[in-house]
Image (tube, rainbow, N blue to C red):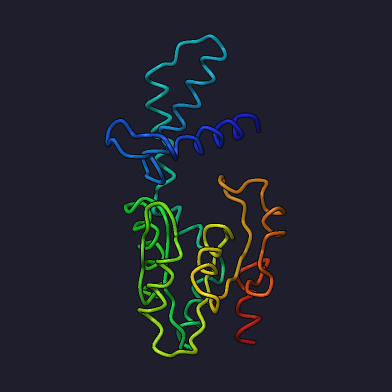
Length: 216
């Protein structure tokens, strides 16, 4: 648990550090995570008074790159998710996928969904590098809402980053938050629950509840 906490601390810090190879912030690029594994190893070596070994550094980078294996993405698709997306689409609604992170990594995830579904379940897929801001939600609504009374729902597992920007974008936009702790939100779930705008955002325990609420 101490190693995990150390990895999370270093990884969060590295998000805002400059990648010396590109001169840009590491942000959510795929280069950050393998480098974090090496940085954790080097930190532990320093604490133990030992010299890091290049062979270990290389092996840690290799292991970390396995996180970006498309098969892992396919295996991690939530049960019932594809059925729900089809149901939403077939009922006349429009699915738009907005995802944040490294372009290459996110494309791999989108391809994994498409290959498992054997069709494209999204009207549009948008990838942003650093943040889902209110403006991008307004752009999505403008592009995919052809009626004034269209309801826009932002669905995600991170309230602050997936849902709140949509609520800030327009007073008519709604949210659906399904809390799942990630390396960025570890230990913050209860604090976020207290901040949720319960009049405009549903808090669900699992994805399948969307079907129960809207299609039963």
